[in-house]
Length: 413
Picture (cartoon, rainbow, N blue to C red):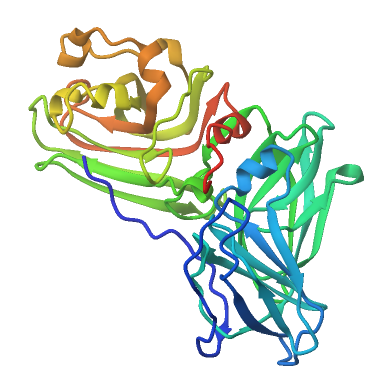
């Protein structure tokens, strides 16, 4: 199986000037590098005036979710610009950091400013952009939600009466939107692009701290919702004879995005297959999903498909071989009408009389090492020819964003 390359969106920021930042090798702990590591950078406001007294922050981008879910600040260091608009850090953290600058009416979030104690975004002058604003309201089943946060930054808003939030001064960029409870539960909602002087309103956002929402495709791309943090993305796979075309489509009537996969199965061999899937992170890492009770989604189209939760424990039985198929899964049939499907994980099985079935591996073993989720079609359970799968609102029930991301250990030590 092969996956399509996708472009992970990056924040476009205006950076001007030549390279004069002094950089040398560094070592140290998570929050600091060698004392010989320095940065010297000038900040200009959006008016081209020197930005005196601007607040400058180093944000731990690599461990941002870890800190937030543990009720800690992701800001590792801060300083102010002087009368000339210059700022300086004598040491830089060994983890990957964003640079956030806030002035009177303009700001900047420069992602991946430094890594491993060294500056990676070299410029002697940074120009700020006029602030954007984002505000709205949320719907939640309890009163526990207390903060709205923009990922990778220090921008937060308290949730006030009527579940409203407001961030009046935000540096332009693309931000995944988080909500957090008082005890540290988190829910990743969506990603929004904020342009200079834009005021974006997001009303009646549904916050749920008890589920893991994989994707509603409303961002219009192949990066999943948790993939905004982990780099996870949707991909295609198909045998050499069959064909498949996948797109993120938009319905102007319902004003919703969804994943649309057109497939043609052309051979009746046991190895014939086609489908789409999503990794849980860009490095194809393993995740313990033992608490998951079911996987649910909306779907329509034509044909019978199989959803499977794919485990490294099964991959290891026959690496790079067709005989590592199939994983634990369940069949479902779609027609031209949207239907809601909820598949309990205790109903997931391996197809009988296959090498993996005969291996005796159990779901209890497999679920502790899940790497991806796939929707596929095969002549073992579906007719040859054209079939189509349209899916939306894919989520895991029984595990939350909080539980998932707390499996990420503090990195950069």
